[in-house]
Amino acid sequence: MKAADVRAMTLDQLEDELAKLKKEQFNLRFQKATGQLEKTARVKQVRRDIARIKTIAAEKAAGKQA
Image (cartoon, rainbow, N blue to C red; front, side):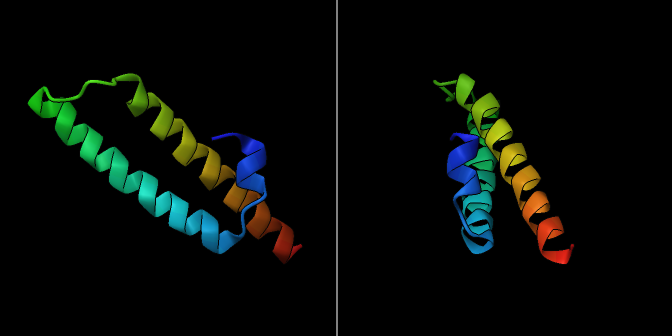
């Protein structure tokens, strides 16, 4: 997910996407623990997407308060 795509989303959409990614991250952790994970790079990608969404959501929230 590109930062430009994330910036185009509303705060509600960001929260929904964040919840979806956290659920996926949870499932990936279990797959890794049980040895069923095939795409190991997806763990890193999801982690970075979560960080990207949190960062942009914080920027938007700070922009509304200012």
